[in-house]
Length: 373
Image 1 (cartoon, rainbow, N blue to C red):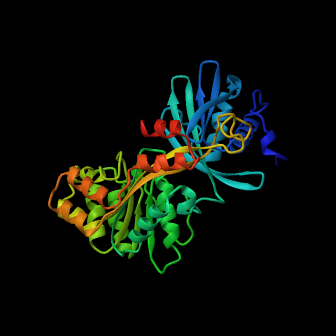
Image 2 (cartoon, one colour):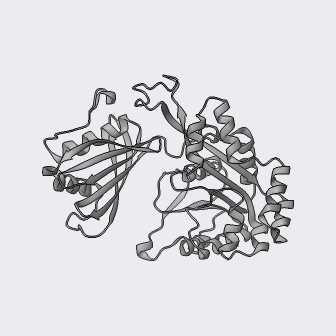
């Protein structure tokens, strides 16, 4: 038990591997880190934290405890300690100052030894986010809420890795879980535990994919299904057919913008008329750092002298109406669909970012940094 997490220092010379693990986790929590990278080198292990989306080095561990350090992490994660040549994934729950944290960890063999990367998720707050707290505007919230009122169809959240797509989907699930619905998720892995929702961990090593899992879930009498990601043509087609047969399907996809989702799904082999019949909503999003208001971006202890503290969403949300469905069914080019959307109130992510700059939520430099990547 630590009296004050803010007083925790990085363990430069820990006596034992267990001490190193406990102190690094506490240090990461104190610094609001989402990930811990432990990278072996010739003479030491360099430890880096990812906070507010940015990664930075915080210290090193001596080589003398490297093997014990990795072994301790493996024991906690419940993976084999005698396997070093292949990747392994595990998880456990850590308790720091009375609070529970779910730790996901990946081990990867490298030239100088095994690399370990840990993802930290608060067990107390997982899945408790509201749309407003994530950064969605009232117009965005209205569009999302309208789409979720439908009993069937396809709702997609798009963006690169680390843009908060899963958190947005879980906020959608949380808004529906008290309704008399049968809700099932297919995830790889399960990140947020949600009471009242049946959550299934997709295990590709056991032959369970998103596509095969989705087919099996249909025999479980679901009303609403969340599929962690549409990664391939087979999953795309199964998801669309599932939405067509009276189910509300939520999923993620990797596209740069909301409207680019339409040609992306068509390229994956989804028929125009099926996409037109099922598509209800597309959300494209990114995460930007928010300005530290303790120091007005001068730099202080609260923001680790970066000028930023926390993150918020900038997004574009497209509620697909009957006219847009008709344009998709008629195989009209993306330019025509974009023109129609703009004429009927669609705002690009850039515009949402500018509004958040004007409101003093983030800086123009931060917005441009995120949108240029």
